[in-house]
Image 1 (cartoon, rainbow, N blue to C red):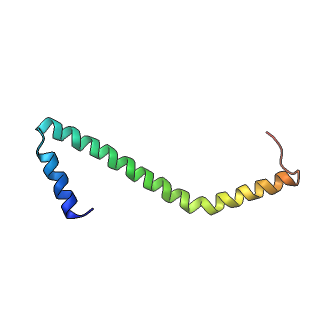
Image 2: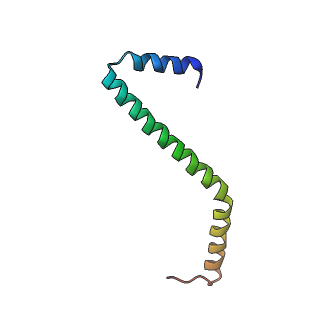
Image 3: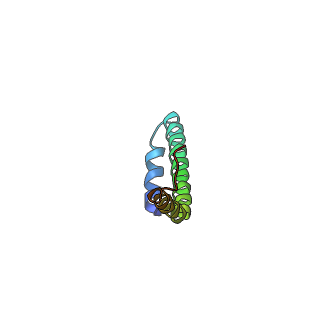
Length: 71
């Protein structure tokens, strides 16, 4: 984020009464935490994506060969 965007955000928040500023900050914290969690999930998924694809292909082969069983 550019400094101009941050400055705009700060100016907007500072224009609010103190109680509303606190609410905005709390919501931003929650939003940023959610974004960080989502980024971590995406990173973890990307790291395991090839393994998941390989496992799915193997399962498909096993089914086609009659080697898979229902549990």
